[in-house]
Image (tube, rainbow, N blue to C red; front, side, top):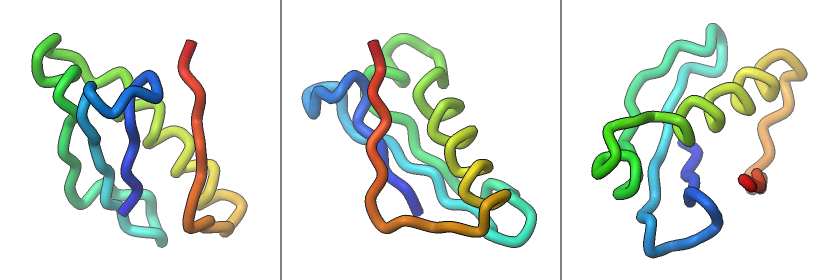
Length: 69
């Protein structure tokens, strides 16, 4: 499971993505507070695209930071 904090601001809440490492299938996800309020999954989708890169490289870091501007 990977967690993300939209816009690097904890007041936006945390989201998470749980996936199968073998085929990149999303098993479960929870949206951050800002995504629930605004009815979009922008940050979840960006997080998932990064996870797909992990799967392609077969590298699964314990911590990974993404910056949104």
